[in-house]
Length: 235
Length: 235
Image (cartoon, rainbow over all chains, first blue to last red; front, top):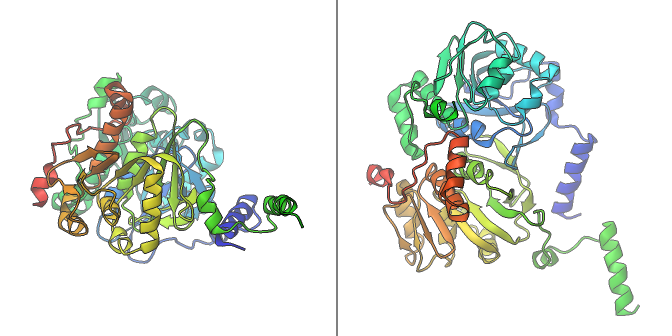
């Protein structure tokens, strides 16, 4: 059998549930996907997540000293809205101790806000996460729960009406590139997540480290959380 | 057995998976990963590719009307420098007709420039690509071949000395956010690829469409190819 055929066969068996991804064994006991001593970043992925909501922060946070990034999903392979697929490192059958839970947004959140199993997982996972960072309509997934209640929070300004309609109790901020309150960092749409990620680097390691990563990635960081040009555009 | 009968029999066995097609045969017959009528974007991935080099352009190009993005790699699962893994849609055992070949950079290119099989694949794949778009040290992979010879091209300014040392024949541009010459679009480091991708949207669909995607993604587009702030920083 040629390698390509084998790969195709293995993928089909995986899809059909004939062979189980190793991660399924983790559903009862917590076998952390992280190495000891790392800054543990767990990113939730789901079909039709928005590419840059995830990968902008992954780029910036991934250059922090000692950072380790793992993807968690309800299934092993997940497709972005733009097409390319990613592989989950662990499954939402379990929850995991982590330092930062990253939740991207995207079209997929429109149906996921009705997903009871995800809602239950989020409540447990947020409790096991030192901090939680949502990008764009990723905030909608937290708004399904009560964890943001009483907190200042924001989201994509194009989806602001929808997200805020899900839960009246957070102190929704209509003009903010990102907001950090309690253990929650919430950001405006797509690229705002990349800016908020650099804020997070600064928060943890100081401005010099954030500038080092900005330079390394040839990025132009909007470092002012109150500078939210798209709040004006989308309103 | 007559030749015609043999061919028919072989075809049936091939269809039934009884005999495996030779790899050589695959490189001449095109098993396209793309749907008909799409703007076909093929992105090369490899271990230790830089996350945003790939996913910044994927975000912007993926919002173009009719775009379809597929990943190609030497193996089915590839790990980015930042950790998360992606799934290849097709393998470099074959080449594919496409409209845009996207080549990200990253630490992985440092060893890949010595990969003879990849070099041979690139020569064939570039010939089957209407346009080629490199980000950051992705340009180094093209510099292994002669396809950029005589063309204006650029790359990450932090890696400029290394990339340009690979091949004297392109007209290397030490100060450019991106360069478009012949069928080649080459860009500076990491985030420059996102700016160049929006240039590509403008090139294909006009400025209004590029602005629509910039707004949708709440991005701040550096739309001036001659504005290369990091050429100054890194020099």
